[in-house]
Length: 529
Image (cartoon, rainbow, N blue to C red; front, side):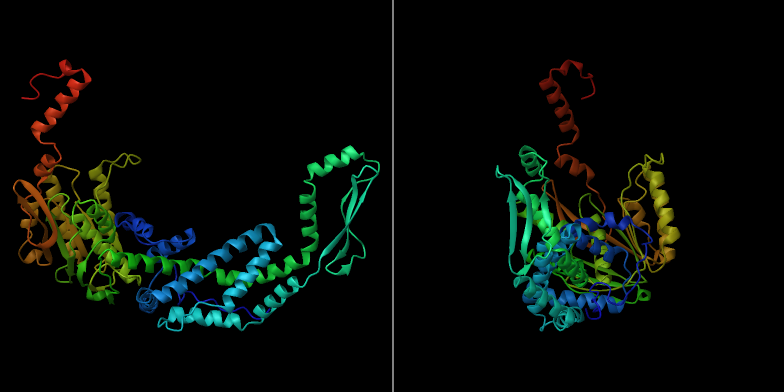
């Protein structure tokens, strides 16, 4: 066959290296696996490639532009998405056929694979309207395959197999009609010079033994397998040679499927009312973010599902703004009011955008960051014998040792594993450290007094934000709107009452359960006064 053609790399076109991320916590904390669940991948390899591209693969400006343009083609044109999806389906089928052929050297499977490959190359997807370098490179590669000598050889091979003649067998039997020998007389319109015996027994073996042997060997099924092994030997070798070229094309399957899956995911976001955009990524040294109408699609989906059942409305879109002079965002507000959702949204948009993906926002421009560090409420570390607070402080130490002024740090209610005054003191120490560092930092907390004290020249880079809530007729109403200011209440008592966990309600539950269970007399008197 002719010289091997270069297969375009649709994810890493400029050969950037893989690197172990400086921190892994953001994968779970930002819900990256949940994000991948929203993309309808056709193969596990595609999901693995997506995770690798978002976490390990380095991304520079040319690579980011390559991906953005390819996604823009697919999101902007249903026709192009359908064409790429058709290619993905054929590549997936070829991938399965190639594996099956490789395992068993099965000629029918191999022949079907070659036919499917030729059919695809002769009738390729139509990408002439594509503007992206990625789809253009893919179209050029398929066109080169169509002009290759290898494709001509494949077509000749298919024709050769179609022109083959039949097969004549000679079966000799004894006086009782039991086969002694089965052999070929004519093979592919050619006389068999030395007819090979496939099932042969000596005359000394009894008819009963020969019948038993036929049963044990599966009779004609066994004969068919032996015939295939003999007849297909030279043709299997040819298919193996073709399979190398087919494998090059099949190697595109994970990347093609990735783009189809995420383009479908982005379209799904839009169908649910989530605005999307391709952000402008600025140099890391500028250290700013200007994001309009940002949403978290992971939370948004559950809210839409709830809304269909008449529950809570969809989450309100919020702006995300920061700069080098206002890089420390301290966020207060009610429990369940949206603080965690907001900071997760900031992290998710940062990650997707700087890797070349669409982001869930109306518009966005922000600086690249070198590392994303996250810390969400930690559990006890039983393996180390550490409680929550020590575990939290260990995490804070790790982040401070690794973060730079170009990092993004997201801390969700740190220092909550100790008493209020100690937690407030330690939080202030941490805030001072991140203020000094200058990294873009989000810090959610219920320590309202601490937040109120962060003023004056020494805290010049602090933005004090709150999630808005209202108490209307004794009911807490969540607005999910992030705005400047300091929340004055966390409304923990109100939430407990809403859940039926007020003081009298709790005691009534205990008494009712005791009465129903027949152990009312065992309750401690005076505890419910």
